[in-house]
Length: 248
Image 1 (cartoon, rainbow, N blue to C red):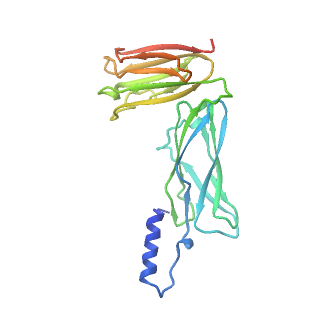
Image 2 (image 1 turned 120 degrees about the vertical axis):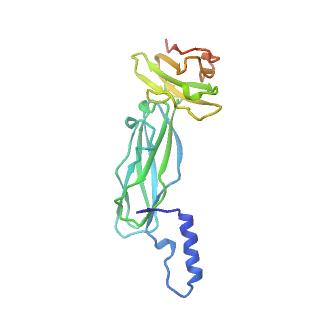
Image 3 (image 1 turned 90 degrees about the vertical axis):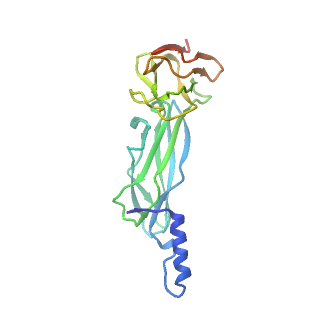
C-alpha cells in the first residue's frame, strides 16, 4: 500500500493520456485509492459525549459493500486515550464511493484538548491511500452546562522550556498539564500560549514551576465572565500554587 498525492496522480495520468492518445489508458476514476476527508477542528461540550461523523472516499464504486481498515496513529495523537473511541473498520455501501464512521469524544476526559490522528491500516486491499486525518479537539463551555471557561495566558520569556504547569481538582487529580509530568512542553517556541479549560463547580489549584528556579514568563488566569483569578509578572521563583473555587 502506498501513500499518494491525488493531485500529482491526476497530473501524471493526464500526461499519459496526452502522450498516448491512441492507446487504452486508465482514467483517474478507475484507479483504486481511498482517502479521508479534510482535517478539521471541533469544539466539544466538556460535560457530555459528542459523536462526530467522518467520511472516507474511494475512487470507484462496487455492486457489493466494502470494508476499509483504519487505526489511530499513537505516535502523533496527543488527546488522552480515555477521551475518544474509534471503529477499526469503515463500511462503504454498495454502489457508493463514500463511507461514514463515528468518532466518540468523551467530554469530561478531554482536558485541555489535543489531536487524534487516524490513518489507513497497511492490510487494506487497495493500491493507494491518502494522507492521515488529523482531528483537533478542544473543550467548549456551552450555555446549558453549569461550567465556566478558565483561560490561561502565558507570555514566554527567553526560556519557555523551563515552564511546567498543571491544574488539579479538589481530590488532587490532574485536570490538565503542560506536558505529562515534565518540563519542556514549550521548547523552541516564542511569544506565548493561550488555553481554555471548561470547569464545573468545585475547588481547584493551578500550580506552575520554573525549572531553573528564577521565575518564567508572565501569566494570567481569567474566567470568561471577566473575573481575573490570578495574574503574575513571572517573578514566582521556583513556582507557586493558586487555589480557586467555582460555585462556592
